[in-house]
Image (tube, rainbow, N blue to C red):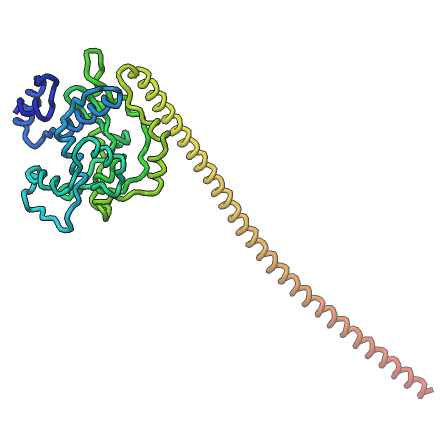
Length: 346
């Protein structure tokens, strides 16, 4: 098993075999289902691709797996797929699927195909890869970190969500160079932090799968982002020579993000305080309005009572005045009568 992994999965130059694979095989055979080689294989392939982008002339990864992954994306799925056939090992009928693709032959033909290739001619999600649950990021970072045999490599599934039958949105742009390095004597290894990142991984559930798995779905903003050259300039994966500078930049970015979070928190607290003050003022205003309304009603009732008493008083005065007038007239008539009687007697 060590020889197979060393010659096929993790090939070395001149046919050498990395002795660290003995510990890997021991862990696989003794721990069983608790361990998997997939992250390690993916790390070695991506690490080799990264070295090629930095100028390496040779691809020091598993070219067989990379070729299988590459060719499977040209296969058009049938309308109905029998998942029971050869389940769950689909490597047996890989050649059959490739023969149905009608792929070009020769370097020039492949160049022409790749130069004219567009998204709708690619099968983004394999029919035999259900992708019900996909680990897409971590709670600490918008990417994951893979540990390989000879180095550490960041991995950002959010950039390739169509391969997992998910809607492709504009991915976050982060400097991942902190976790992009080869193992060496003087190279520090952040194993605990990498484990922490994996423990905080986030999963995309089945209900987030798009309807068209083959074609892949994306938002219009992703096309604009992808065609903008500046978008890729924000995602360096540097080399060991830039390691210290990149760590400093990463630390400064983290401090900036922390300061921004602190400012945002303080602003939120201030806004909450202002909102509370406004709420208290509004409550006091409403209370004052209720008190004033109550006093106004009381004043109106008191005015109505006084007005009624005044009307009664005026009525009483008028009645008294009328009685006095009647008595005065009566007295006057009596005096006139007495005066007449005296005149007659004389």
